[in-house]
Amino acid sequence: MGYFPYECMECGGAYERCARGCEPGEGCDGDGSQFCWEDEVICIPVTLQVQKKTYSSTIITQIFEKIKDKPLSGTYNGTGDFQLKITKETLDNDETLFKEFQEMEDNKWPSSIFVDEDGANDLYNCIIVNVWCKSCYSVDEEDE
Image 1 (cartoon, rainbow, N blue to C red):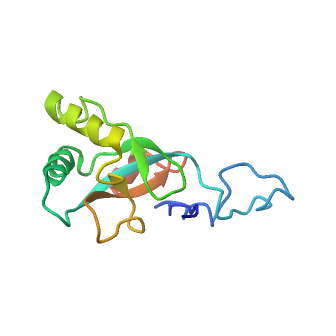
Image 2 (image 1 turned 180 degrees about the vertical axis):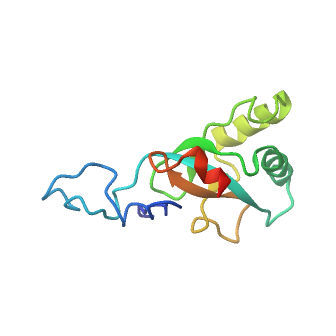
């Protein structure tokens, strides 16, 4: 599996601009390339994908219902999944659901929970997110 960038809803992402600060001769010459994504992101969960009814799909569905359309900060590691900062407060102080989420994240099971449209496939349950580079996102985005 290789590395690939996400597409920012504002700037287009790493192929459109360099978020790493590359100098001339360091690969992208400052114009952007496959590896020039910004690590910190803002994601808004937009779609729940349930391919297989399992215990995990029930948990993912409950999580989705609590976070749908909320901007969440996180990071991207280049492999297609996003590690979002989910807290007990994000889940409306549902301690049981928060513990279930932590277990799923710790075990990376059933697979990555948060993916963008390109990262989703028909094989597993996930939450599809719209993505912004953290530096591109503004609260005004929600009003559009």
